[in-house]
Amino acid sequence: MARPFGRATASSDLAAPLAAALLGAARAVAEVIGGRALDDALAAVAADAATRPAIQDLAYGALRNYGRGDYWLSRLMDKPLRDAVVRGLLLAALYRLDLRPADAHTTVHQAVTAAAGIARGRYRALVNGVLRNALRRADELATGAQAVPEALWQHPRWWLDKLGAAYPQAWQAIATAGNQRPPMTLRVNRRQTGSDDYAAELALAGIGARVVDVAAIRLDKPVAVERLPGFDRGRVSVQDWGAQRAAPLLDARPGMRVLDACAAPGGKTAHLLELADLDLVALDVDEARAARVHGNLQRLGLGAAVMTADCRKPAEWWDGRPFDRILADVPCSASGVVRRHPDIKWLRRPGDVARFAASQREIADALWRVLAPGGKMLYASCSLFPEENGAQIEAFVARHEDAKRLPTNDNKDDWQLIPNADQDGFFYALLAKRT
Figure 1 (cartoon, helix red, strand yellow):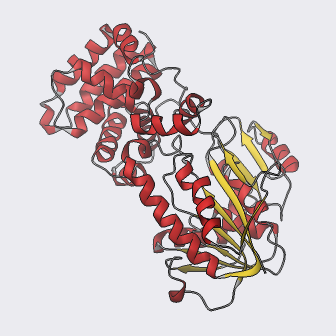
Figure 2 (cartoon, rainbow, N blue to C red):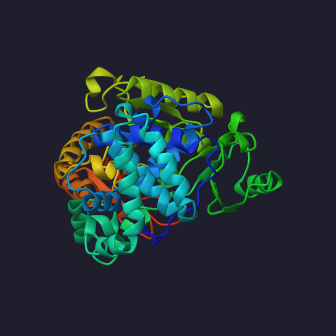
Figure 3 (spheres, helix red, strand yellow):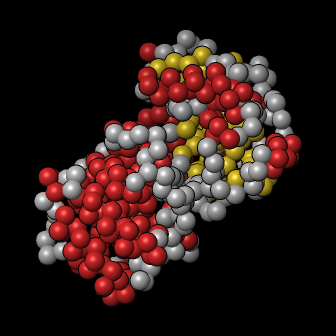
């Protein structure tokens, strides 16, 4: 069989019956097709502990490969499926056929078994026929997919157009990176250990890794956090290397009053506190997400004032004392982290970028009012789109005469990180408030 979805990465052997995993993944993918975030969809799928990892693996794979899977189904079926769960099942099965071509017979058989659990089994024959037809026509369909941008690059056309306009020399590499499995990178708690010492501990535990920065260690392959030495004691956290750039850039020093304005889940909050003793306020608009900040700080043995409030409305939460440093990690399209959240590519709409940009403007303007003269604000996003990044900062500086752009990397005013083997896509701009 040709490899219709490109070079697939190996995954762990399914510990639970494949049919149950395919059915769970089908339900999760159907929820995403209906507009629900993948994390929420997976949380809603009933599964035991043994089955859940396989469901997650198949659901993530099906959505990373959705562009090509959608194209294949358009050629394999006379008319679109009305049942979203059956569609999800076929997408998950097509992904596994590519992942494990030697197991094609098992995949088809187990997908048909899974179909027995949908709509009283009325789609079993359809699932069997579509998948067997896919095996017969694999070479033809793989060739046809090369001519369809959404199928070839696994992103919506409007998204590809935006990447092409912003990164004419790099958009193909960016799209390719967005379809890969993300690396698992650790941030060592420098209050407790260093990256070299912790890497040695990982080696003793049989976990392959390499040091990539003073606090960052990339694992050769993902492992459960329970296997990480001292994780429960706060010696290390999981955080992308790109995200780890934020705290050092802010240059928060001991005793400073610091605001992390969009703090959940708390990775950057914790990193700031690992670097210095601060009077830190961690703010998030969502109560459940703010609770995650509490949990992360508790595991790490760190303290901050965690508040639930809308940072755009200082009158509702600010006590009048200005902040020396502010981290504005703004909500965004998340276009730089789609390999971790493959549903985002297909849930976002072209108008969402402008909507995020408008909210980011409100946030930046509101936070500037609570920054002390002489203070610094780091604007951060996990977006690749200029409207949310460089253009946002240019407009901000034009509105605020007391704002000065500071260098972030190699004496450049802004720092756009592109997704690659070691990091996700992030944007940073450091602003100083003139006295």
